[in-house]
Amino acid sequence: MKAYEALAAVYDKLNGDVDYGSIADFYEAAFRRAGLAPTLVLDLGCGTGRMTAELAVRGYDMIGVDGSADMLSRAFERKYDCPAGQRILLLQQDLRAFELYGTVGAVVSTLDCINYLTEEGDLDRCFSLVHNYLDPDGMFLFDVNTPYKFKHVFGDNAYILEDEDEEGGCYCGWQNEYDEKSGLCRFYLSVFEEQEGGSWRRVDEEQTERCYTRQALTAALTRAGFEGIEFFGNTDFSAPTPETERWYVKAICKK
Ligand SMILES: C[S@@+](CC[C@H](N)C(=O)[O-])C[C@H]1O[C@@H](n2cnc3c(N)ncnc32)[C@H](O)[C@@H]1O
Image 1 (tube, rainbow, N blue to C red):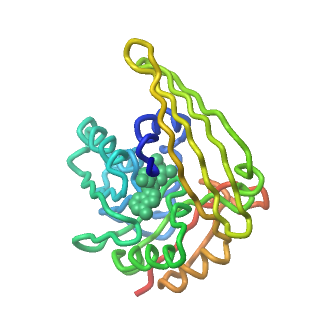
Image 2: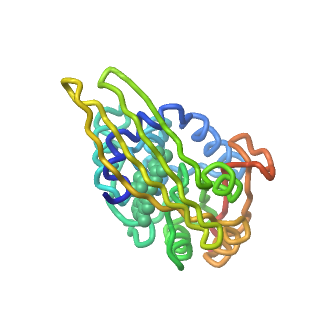
């Protein structure tokens, strides 16, 4: 199955412990530190729309872009349940070829969407579009899995993720294959979801992420026209350490 088909049904359950509120606090603190007050924000790779809804509730007009129809259909359900749902526009588009009707004050991209840009030139295509659709001095904030995480956490390891709620259980077997030379990490996922009546449905899915170094990300952002590039080791603006597993990156659009 294609990436984010099978996983869409259980994505929120498996990511139940992600603190979107803290990440949104970081985004807002970054805006304030730069003296920015964006009103329209693009959530690039919005997935099931958890960050999109979080920021809409905080008063931002939101555009969510994602390539997966299955993830977006979850985001649509969330939009209609969200008290600020009327602030959310959802678009099914590719991160490397998206089109908006105008510019936005900020672009955010949460939970390693940028690592899904795996082909030669993908990063440049995406960053140049982000630059194109940002207002002058607008802010781009994204996070990526670090080279340390690819090598020492994903590696060639296997993991089991499990969760259960009132709708039933779900269980995800996850095997990784990381090739340090190419920087590509393949994830082989087998998702088991409990159905009404107690039977289990199994769906397999394959995903690929690319590992980007700090130098490669900085060079691509610079080529696209960004300045003020900073890497943080967490949402508290702390400096990354050699064992940091996720970089939070901030860049300012210069025009
Ligand atoms: C790990 S999920 C993150 C989703 C969401 N931002 C969150 O915080 O939960 C990565 C998302 O990126 C999307 N994605 C990956 N590659 C893409 C591409 N080339 N174009 C559009 N969306 C893409 C996937 O469909 C998926 O929803």
